[in-house]
Amino acid sequence: MLSPSTRYGSVPRLDVRGVSVRFGGNMALDDASLSADEGRVTGLIGPNGAGKTTLFNVVTGLLPPTSGTVAIDGVDITRLNPYKRARRGLARTFQRLELFTMLTVRENIRVAADIHRRWSRDKEDPAERTDAIIGRIGLRATADVRVTSLPTGQGRLVELGRALACNPRVLLLDEPASGQDDSETEQFSRLLRELADEGVAVVLVEHDVQLVMSVCDVISVLDFGRVIAKGTPAEIQSDEAVLTAYLGATAGST
Image 1: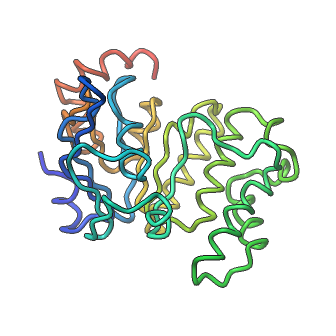
Image 2: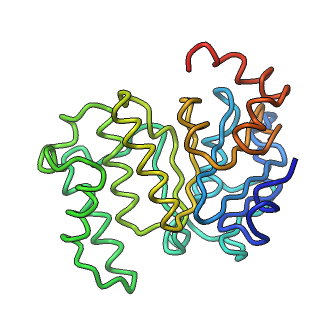
Image 3: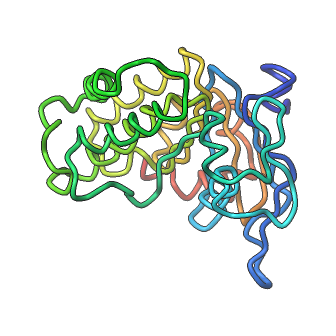
């Protein structure tokens, strides 16, 4: 089975190689590798506790790896702090909602747009950027509502909007469809494809297998901290190791 980088180019936008993370005697990640190309949606799936969020934390600099490297566009960023990684075009959402709870939808996104404007060379007005993002994520009706009043599905869209305000080149999404109803998930799926078509390298961690299979170009599967399979959705759905470790247990809920 060919790796995504072999299929789509020699230098991935995001390239994680041989990452291991040990917590005492527990190996949370064991020689895990992941690549994501611009213009593609890359899925990262696996059972609870497989190491998916841990891998995201390594990529974004919140957690140092025991071994391994992280690169963006071929440049090693393993030793950079999270802020410098963000300035290289890396943005993420979190498994648990991380919103500014005292602020409205508009204010949450505007904070990110203002910060991005301060350090970047982007001349776009932060207010205009914020308003455009609110429209894109479908939250105009609640733009001036405090985020604590929103259902979880819409809260996750706010978090996505805040990430988009940073104009990311690599976008890591940790269970972003959790709490969404069917219509919201369908709209979200279209948005992911649009972002990929615009050249963003999207990496999606998600337990909604139907969404993953419909929107992702390539998928990596983690189990007990190890990548057990990489391939297209069709290849992953027919992989015996994946069926045994994960998809067989979730098929009935998709």
